[in-house]
Image 1 (cartoon, rainbow, N blue to C red):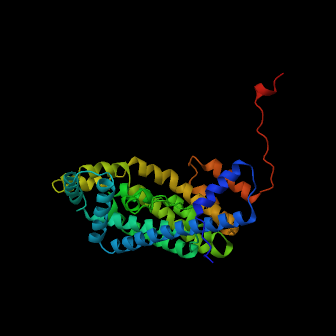
Image 2: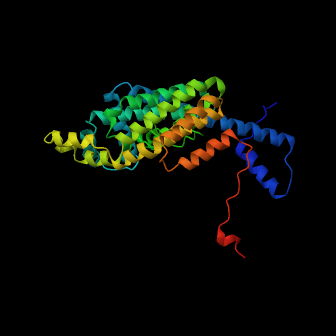
Image 3: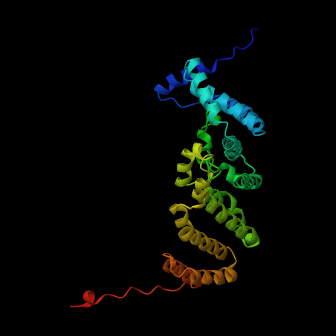
Length: 336
C-alpha cells in the first residue's frame, strides 16, 4: 500500500478559502490543522527574531569594549545603511567615510557612541517577552550614572545621547529598529522619564523610602547637570570650538557663564522637583517627615510662582476630607 501523501498547507488554505465562499463552517480537523500551522509560523518568526537579536547583541557588546571597536562598528553600520542599502557608488562612500573618520576623531563622540550602544542593549532587553525587571532597573541606574560620570567629556554630544536608540545607525543596520518597550525611555539622558517610569516606582512603598529619597536626590542632581551641560549655549560654543586653542581665556570665561535656560531651571524647576519628591515620600509612608520638610520648603520659596499651588496641595494632604470653601462673589455679582 502506498504511503499517505501529506497535503501541502497552501492547498489546505486554498481549499478553505473556496469552501468559505460557500459559507461552510470549519471542521474540527481543519481548525486543528490551521492552529498547528499558525503555531509553526509564529515559532519560525520568533526564532528568526531571536537569532537577529543575538547577533546584534554580540556585535554591540564587543563594540562597547573600546573606542576603536565602537568606531569600527559605527563605520560598518554607516556603510550598510547609507550606502549598500541605498546602492550608492563606492566613490561616494569613500568621500563620506573620510569625513566621518575626521569627525569621529573626537574622543567625546566615541564615548557617546559606547553609551548609546549600552542603552540600546538595555532597550532590547526591556522590549523582550519576559524581561528581568529587577536586573533591568539596576542596569538602567548604572547606565545613567555612567553617562553623568562622563558628563564633562560628553558636553558636546547631546545629539547622539538624546537620539532614540532604536533609530540609531546601529539599530537600523541590524534591523532591530521596531523594538517596542512600554514605560521605557529611548535615550540615556531622558532623565525625567527614566526616573518616573523605571528607577523610582520599585521603591514607592514604606520599606523603600530611604532608597526612594536617594533616587529623587540623584535625579535632581542629574537633571541639573543635564541642563548645565546640554543647552543651546553649549551647542553654539561647539560650533566655534576650532578657535578655542587660540582663545582659551575667552572661552574659559564663556564656559563659566551660565545660560538663561539653566538659571531659570535652577530658580523655578529645581524647587518644583524638591516639592514633588516630598509629596512622593508623603504619599508612600513618610507623612511626618515629609510634611515638616514641605512646610520648610514653603518658607524657603515664599516668592516662588508655585507657592499657592503647593500650599493648597499640602492642605489637601493634611486634611484630605476637608471641604474647600467656595470663592466669595464680588459686589457686582450680588447686586440686584
